Length: 326
Image (tube, rainbow, N blue to C red; front, side, top):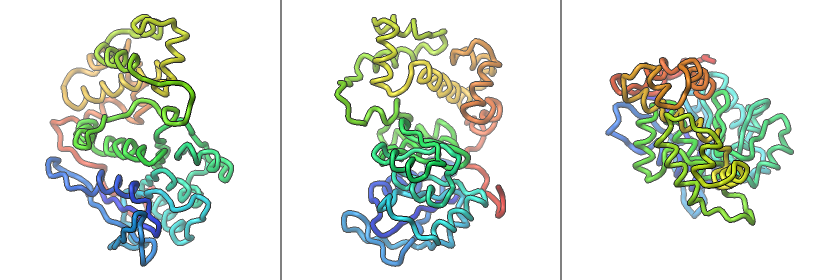
């Protein structure tokens, strides 16, 4: 089983820890394979926010056995984490362990030097501080999460759910990630980024764009353009692009590209349709264009994705890493 270990510390961010346990520790017997989960104690006496006491069975040395380590926030972004924790994370990552921080947990990864030269994000209240303190990091302030070279960082606390579903999608495919989201009564992927949540004087009702987005999802095989979407919304192109970005947090074509790929993933997982047909149904004008877009975004080919996640094959996470693997 893919082994997930989650850090617990004095002053533990309870909500972020709850996200980790809900997504990965909850038994899911309806799936043929799932994660194993262990809580790792940073300190002997852990008092979480809200007056809770945490009894964790794991120690820092156990991080070396993890396939994924989750950092559910950090008690104070201005406080440097203990060197023993930073050393353990560096060693684990060098051995191939995937790292996942929620909200302020990114400051642990930053202090360990693991984000230098990489893209990362955190809660919009902390992005400026992260960039000032760690100028080597390519801070992305307007997104819900960033996945860069086996390190996943998420924005505000709830964005940890989005990032966690992305991780599940990587390990088990769209169908299982969607099933987990449905059990949480959540959309499989939220539209937009942190721009939706930063205080603004601009009203954002979302209703006109919500209807248009649903229509676009039902017509992905068509060669949709900004002009066509603007006409459907009854706006000029300039007004439409401004309104769409304000409400959704992404440019129309960037959002549409993502929806096309989600649709293609679903078809690859659930059908035996030829790749050329999947490309057409997802709105790509050629199989080569589809392959390039799929590879650029998902870092694998459509054929390899189908081989791994099609329902006709047993589902499961990546093979556990071996010691010393990069």
